[in-house]
Length: 336
Image (cartoon, rainbow, N blue to C red; front, side):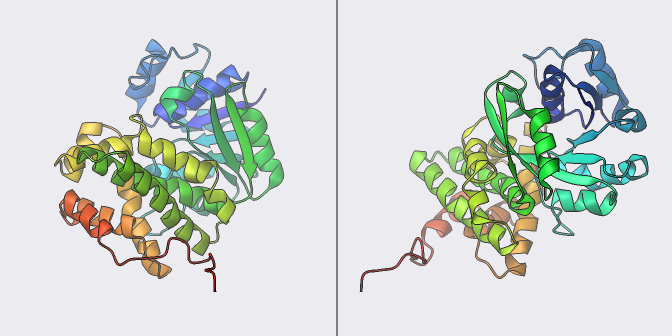
């Protein structure tokens, strides 16, 4: 049994708290909002996970020191926009070698850093790792079979995370490609916005398949330029996470995209979804990274124009379809 602190009581942090508790670990769930964590602890319910009753012997707290004290592993489950500020609060409380597993998916807009880079920058004494893959909290909390990948540059850290999270319905693989995992996790949210916009416009399965397929090409193009490995983008945190985020109504990014496709503004869509829409924050960062590495990412470009330049969604789809003709894979040889 491990003592584990979950930093963040959103749907994903809460679902992971239930998973780790059911795996036999002693779990403390923390929220920065005292009223929120008091209600969860009192009712043993999370408002966005209505089908799940939370275990009574999870510890619920708004005291960050209590959540971190004597814990071998800390799970960072706050939205990506709050990772830096939360890590900064954690720094004086974190012990040397304490493992911090990031669940947030995003790239910081100003610094263009991934979440594990931010955590390591703010908490240099910790072991920063990631857990990612096609995994909606609504399903994990109900024991629906799910697979993820634990990423760390150190094999023993990844394997320790694997052993703690593995269960009969939650299978975990390991990978040293932290950069590839994080780029895939962040950019799939941007592509999912595009998929949702297409749904909102009333387009069909052909359009969705095109966005997923060309979307993973853009993710892999940027990810490999940043040092990620091509194999990662064919795996759970690449095409796997992209498929589930583009196809599921659990996806807040797809839901926001649907609303934008129906004519909502970005702000109106985010207000309607009532949860943090990570892809909105990652879209600008992805476009800045494309410029930094001199890459063409047409879907990312059009999503940015729709979100921030008031471009009509139907016009963006038209511009994607009418781009100059291209070869699908330039590495394949032609017959002489």
